[in-house]
Length: 308
Ligand code: PH4
Ligand code: ZN
Image 1 (cartoon, rainbow, N blue to C red):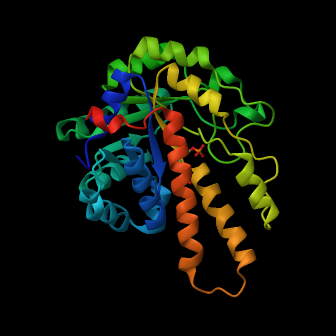
Image 2 (image 1 turned 60 degrees about the vertical axis):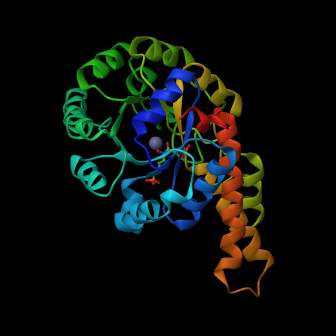
């Protein structure tokens, strides 16, 4: 059972109370690492691309790779559009065989977010393609630019949004941020808000900006010429708690990037005579694979392929 609708993955995770890893890729090395890790962990998985990934590699390369290898793997997996900002991008993804999309108009006024999301659901539902949307906004929270009430999801609004749009999954902003610098002080996720959103929507929920930003990789990058001092992520215990409270899909990109870059930086510094990129890229790909396995175990999705 290889490429499946995101709906199937989300529904099972919601029913059985675990989360599925959703890992971003921009190139062959990340895609291969993700699928091989999921296969070895016997875990369902989302492979996902953003609009900037599409600008970088071209959607033909990204979707073409997935469709070329889909029968090599026995685990169920979905090809997902992450943070699609426009209906046109959703249409492009549909034409290229994506089985799941996110429409993210969370930076627009509420009614506009709702209308565009409804439109995307009307396009995707007849095709069996899953639709994820977002409420509230990620990032910026730590700067105290705005009050938390303004940027975090409103649970009552989430209930109304779910009913009026017919989405398959919701990404509620509960205090996380994208990238390697998530918090200035301690990590602070609003678990009570998450609990309420789950109770009121009874939908599969998605956690964005969930990377752990593990010390060993930050340290390796800083040791070999990088400068990411002060990088900070979401502690594993907080991710576990979020899954217990109803998160069913966890987006992870930064942890894979850190594993890749740390390995590249170290090897390029140690093996100064090498000019064969494969000798750098292969170990970096292996490190990404190990990271994906680590995250899959954290989300509780190891062995869950047998549910499908
Ligand atoms: N994502 C990934 C967003 C990647 O434009 P881009 O391709 O750089 O965007 O949706 C996440 O939620 C990743 O969270 P993380 O940074 O904590 O891994
Ligand atoms: Zn995200």
